[in-house]
Length: 287
Ligand SMILES: Nc1nc2c(ncn2[C@@H]2O[C@H](COP(=O)(O)OP(=O)(O)OP(=O)(O)O)[C@@H](O)[C@H]2O)c(=O)[nH]1
Ligand SMILES: [Mg+2]
Image (cartoon, rainbow, N blue to C red; front, top):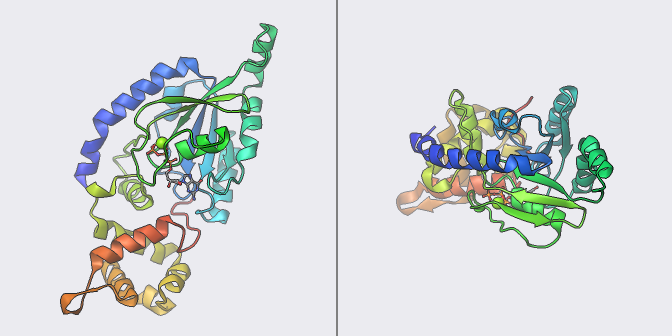
């Protein structure tokens, strides 16, 4: 992965880690958002160590963009490991109504203790964590009703922590997205780049798009062929990923002076269409 991406992490990472540790004693539970298209790459490997014994609810979010069969496999894996998890989508609203109940179930002991102390009805405080652009603020807005937290389709929108009260008796702590580099694994960096968790300004767009071509060719050749009218054979037999990107550009008529293909424009288009779910419901990694 581009080394400039990795250089970008440390200060930011340390600051958010500090904030998480500082706020942890004030919360009853943590909601971890995983991007259903990349559940492994979007998981913070340090999270369980940082949160210690705090109950965690994992949400596979953006599930409307992910391959439903893959998401079901991920959920099965998490269930088997005894981790609480739900499949949700904050745009369609799918699965969201189960969250407050699941939190209450997770915190049954704590709620009972509050009741013993005559503190029944006390709001449950939940910290929402996840990589940049995964949908933390979108989720909070859906649960709270209305546009309470700022949402944009780029990483790094939420800059500081913010408490938001929901009608369902939850107080949610929005946090800035944070990337946790898994240095040993280049695929993780690629997955984060392709799905939009890393600022596009610091990425080599054509390289990332070529990587996406490869991943789609390997796992979803039929969807790729159908979207760009390539024919299954062309997808299968095109020798290199950059050539495939060029073929897609030619099909779309993205040409520059001299009849050359505008690969930059093709790359931006391909990434946009993938992120917008236009190619199909796609998951890039399996449990
Ligand atoms: N399809 C789909 N899009 C989603 C979902 N959740 C969020 N998005 C989109 O993803 C983009 C980022 O959403 P945010 O809620 O701003 O993400 P965030 O995690 O708060 O991002 P940062 O504050 O930058 O860390 C927006 O374009 C949302 O509309 C989801 O469940 N499904
Ligand atoms: Mg946000």
